[in-house]
Image (tube, rainbow, N blue to C red):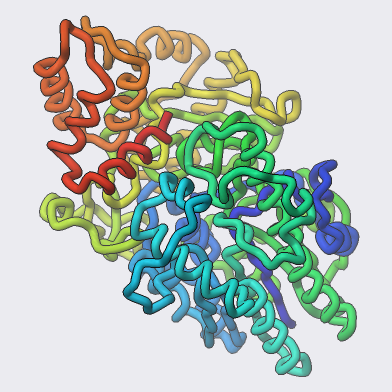
Length: 595
């Protein structure tokens, strides 16, 4: 038995013809849909990049206990289980986050691995001199941290000069593995590219597929910010066109795998999974990217294809499945037991006859909404019930975030926690969620309130439902799913739920009446400039209650005639938090994306 998983990053199902009537050229995704099973209700679990990949290994939700981090000593790992049971596992990837501090334990779980450098801000080019940035490109720097931008532009220049594209190199390596091992048995390969993640870089053969060369006359713009759309329609259309072009490049790479499987009749004994970690917003609902807005369909509902050679079924499936079901599906395919720690289930029943494997699924970012989807197309987004987004903690034995260790201040506040049902009897360290780790900064859910959607009637999520009885049902299901995940007790408190209570529609009405509002937390007898109010809401999303109190006192003292100005909050940020002026501007811009 053999298995191939082709994994993309930030691939929107709305850009694939099997899922949407769009103008994007995806002939190989179309071809795949005719051969494999196409899942119409496949959802992410934990987002973004490494939280999703932890689920690919462990088969259980990450986001209630942890933000971005490495595999833990107590984690089970699907590739490692395969390896220990005589199945050779190989990873080929250009995804640089595997080699950050917050992802550094994943690649060693495979029998072998290869990595290709240069995506985005990968610290690859060893050139001390700062790159020369043309004036028409320099305007885009406002979207990025100075260090990120410097490394990206050096990579961009090298890739262009050498005609070297990490995605192509990754698929070349994947093809080499297939060619070398076509006559071998019992192996699994994961071919994974960072594309079509932003920035949208690609060879010229793809760049002008959706707009003519010279048609766009604006500044260089291939990297949307993580926030609301502030650009004009010409810029938005141009950036979306580049994203479409990169998706077509990904489609061509997928076609190489399909061609090889056709040529060697691999459909008789090889499982094929084609998936991604999350989607991307390119202007929908006036949002860019992911993370900083509610976890809308564009981000959470994913394209997913599965070909199982045992039944060789194709067609569409409606039953709910998630990323946590991938490892269980692969282990079951190779005839191995699914560990008790894994919450995921084999998707074979869905492939065979669309038989449901779960009634509900959780998804979300650590420290943001706790989201629930059911098998009938309803989504409930439960928000934090206080502007400070507290209490919120990280549980780990590996205190690293995306780009480094937890701060000394955060580590000094750590305390030994209880063991969880998936930690093999080990007690974990409990650390306060720290904005430097990326926990509460993803999205301050308090400002949006709880949201209920019917995806069948409203797939664009334009009009939230006002149905107290359905909301009560979803709340009770959410509590049970959280309990099944052995969620920390404070997660229930953060979103204002009693884990032992069974909620009624009358309870929902009462909760709504007690719900605090942004205005009640901010105005407090003072007038606010609109931009000042927006910035303070964003700032409060990454602050503790004590810090919020101190900041409010500062603003009261420094207001002018009871008017709190935007410039006063900027001054607060510089004095209290960020000294470097350039970094401070980036910090404030990043906060404003939490609108």
